[in-house]
Length: 427
Image 1 (cartoon, rainbow, N blue to C red):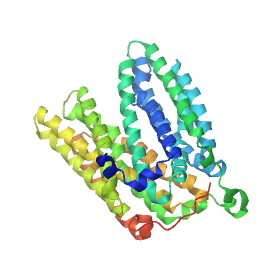
Image 2: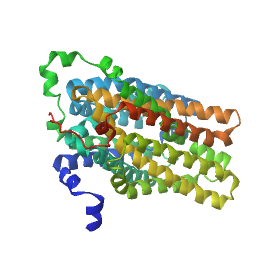
Image 3: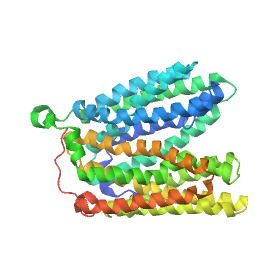
Image 4: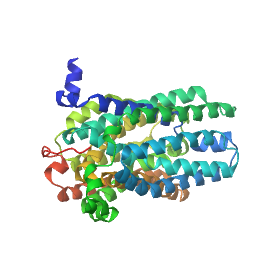
């Protein structure tokens, strides 16, 4: 009990009321569905449905582009109609498209369904972040975003374990069951979220003030703080998540010549570290400069890539150990980034533009997920794959330097260095 009291301060425990608990429950259920189908896109299309790898990877890239393009539109809808309306529409559409995806037998069916999934999936980040920012007081947002990230990773981990026990590459029916179950889980998460409709409507000021209704992306894009954050975040993500997802497995198998089964063990350390360290990290970064914390993330990710590159010179057993250590380092960086990024964006965002601000911040993930594979492909196609980790690590450091430059544009409360001023919450 004393450990919980230490990790979760009394003021934050007081903030975890019924609405926040229901939000976290919805996060856990939704992420469980994501975990069920995690990293199965290409495998499903190629190994199960028999489509070419070129078609599968091209469709994956197209999905990323559609997600990026649709995100600003969903951000506008979130501000106009409220996050609950957007979430309920997209959840319903996601459930239907997942069932269609489970039964896609031709390239045209797979293409249309995948693009629909990407279209409605582009709403997730902005709407849910906006809803969470309304449920908790501003001074608790950083902890709230951090705990949400921990629960998300815990649930994805469970989902991966469940899916591993269900799927069979030689039985299409197993994937049909998996995706249909995912559709049901998605609907359940939506029903839980719907209980928060009190917090998820269009804000009163926007309904009553014609001037506010006229403001939109032009005002968002004029905010130099947001522009600087998005650029820095894109570079930082290319030096982190984007490149890890694009080439980490390839490097481990082709350059380090390790078994593909080792990758699952390594990522187990990632999820475990996030779940075990997130609350401790939240306490350590509370009251610290958010931009400096994100620069610290860049340094940790640089260390991760250096260890990965150094593994080339190690025997296989030591290489595996070093990769597990590196993944722990990377995960600690994740636990630092997840709370401060969302809290910073929602602190600088005006209430009537919050959906657009969160959508713009979400573009950093989509852009890095699109650019990082191209950069990674250049390294490996030019036969300089052994230099890829170091080049990616330097990219992370550049992202950290850009975050430090952003600090000059932020007030002390926006940067997290001073307590928040009193806010008047609007529902």
